[in-house]
Image (cartoon, helix red, strand yellow):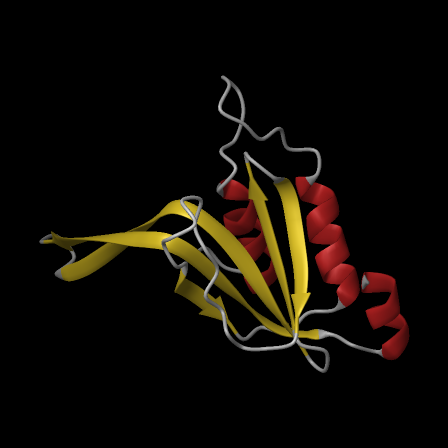
Length: 140
């Protein structure tokens, strides 16, 4: 799919991170007279990548099905959570454009990470989060 898009000159116009829930904790720093907010992404998630001419690409990594991707032609983004009931909601988005090579490089970097529940592993949910942060060029 990526090779075909590259041949056609398709690039990406942004990314959307969807998750079951986002928790925000706000704190006031009296020394700096400023509020800060810390967001935590909870539950299953996925990354939705917007192409410049051929719909959307969804990417997720989950324990039950492994790596899943889907090319869809619509902006209906209601992915289902692991329970089959909960809808994934938009928790962050970026309009930073990037090329097919940028996506390929980001995926290549993440393939060497060990995901799972065992000691020394990164949680499955970190896959979409790290991919979003890499492509958006900023923390979520």
